[in-house]
Structures are given as structure tokens and as C-alpha cells.
Image 1: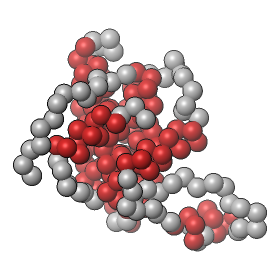
Image 2: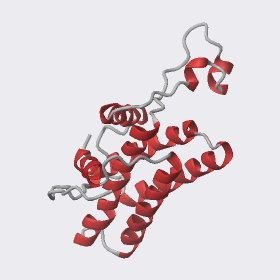
Image 3: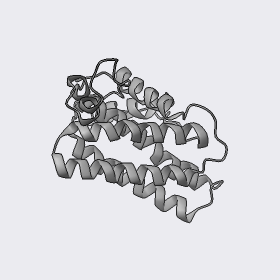
Length: 190
């Protein structure tokens, strides 16, 4: 996982803060807006693109991890086992499909994102993948997560999308780079 520095910064910057999935969606939308604005107005090789657009991507990845830490992880499940009803599995009537693991530590959130990267086949290098493609994928997944929240007011369908959002952001960072969070952090009053 390439984004531990930003998540550590957030945890020290706002100690003890916890939010529901809707709040995290709002924060991710904010940073996606920044990344899209910078990506559409500056060249890819420009220092501002690296610092702001890809810095915002770093924040989105860390926010996905924080969301899962606070609200649980919905892991990508293996295919149904022999003898399990395929209809029950895909309609969510199977008891295993509704399991959510919470609370989780940072390591389990990273594991869920790495599992998603592997499932999507996004582990291998892809020189043809543009940064703007990641922004489009993120915009779509955030829209789906918003709709899931609006319809169900339940964390589970949103956490499913958050895992994918985290994987998209981590992949973009791996392919295009992002500034590292190395500045010393002082703890601010809550």
C-alpha cells in the first residue's frame, strides 16, 4: 500500500474523530473536485498537477481507508460454494453476503483495497492508463455510492463502493505518482 503517510497524518491531525460513510463521501467529493479542476487546467508534467491533482488523489485513497476503519469493511466475497444457491448468493439472501467486519484496523482496510486491486487485475503496470481515466472512474463510483446512501441509508452498499474507490485511487498513485506526506505533524486541539 503506497499511501500510509497520508493516513497517518490524518489520524494525528484529527485524533479521535470518527464519521459515518456519508461524511466521508462528502470529503472524497471535495478532493475529487480539486483533482478534476487541476487536471483540466494544467499540464500533466506541470508541478502544480503533481502537487494538487495527485495530492488530492492521495487524500482520496487515505479517506477510503479512514472510512473503512470507522465503518467497517465489506470484503469482496469469493464465488458461491458448491451446493449454495446462486440465486440466494447474488440476491443477498445468503448469510455470508451480508457480513460486514467492524471495527477494523488500518491493516484490514489496506488488505481490502489490495484484494480489490487483485480482483480487478489492476496490479500489473498499464502505461496507457491516463490520470483523467482514474478521475472518471472515481466520479462514477462516488455517484453510485451516493445513490446507494440515498436509497438505503445503510453503510454496507456504500462500503462496497468505498473499497473500489480506494483501489482506483491507489492504482492512480502507483501509476502516476503523488507527493509524499513527510512534513512533521503537530497534534491540533480537537
